[in-house]
Image 1: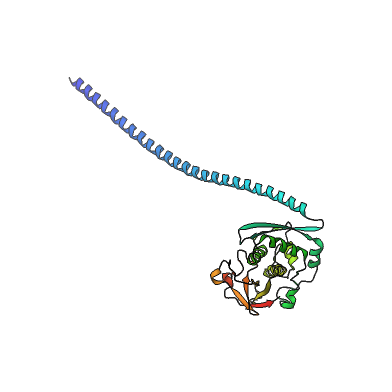
Image 2: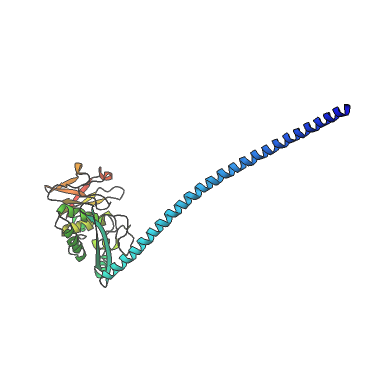
Length: 299
């Protein structure tokens, strides 16, 4: 009986010990599972994050590929355009392509000119006063070259593309304004401190505010407009040059039509024309020039 009890006791003890061992092993496995599960969750989160980054990178790469394809198309279009321009240019001439808008910024236009090398060289070899020198009626008149054939060609073309004098004045203004890109097939530095003749500005596709103003003044004189040059007061050896335009009427299509800006000279209105910065029309005064005093120089 005792042995049985002992046996039972031993058996129960053995079972008990065995059962306790299983519980301890189960706890260890559970903890290991929890650790591994946490590690896998962390790895999964990391992979999800990396996948998100890679997806964004892939999207960016796709956009870059599309942009490159578009650029490649533009390059091919430019090559075709360049070849056509070069084919249309006369011998011993400089090709000049001018992009501008008629119908008050609605219709895109393009002029391709053949500027004779001899005309450009003639002006380029002449003495050029530095900025602020000879800035008077007599000195400026030399830079209004109304007899130049290339400038007369521009006016003839733009006249045929416009309906009214105001539209013509604004189309020519858009043509001379700096649009931030080079339209000529030849590129020259534009940041100069010397005056430029209009043909130089066309060929070199750039200049300071005086160069744009001289070019516009010349085109407008050829087109038959009354104009004046507007020169701001000199501050820190710098000033701004623009053009005043007589429209024989009101500037009806200026962007700031509620407050058109003009000067009265010889009992006539001359509307302000910003010839350098792009996006302005005849009669608009840029905000940065609102408190600037201008001197009128008749031409």
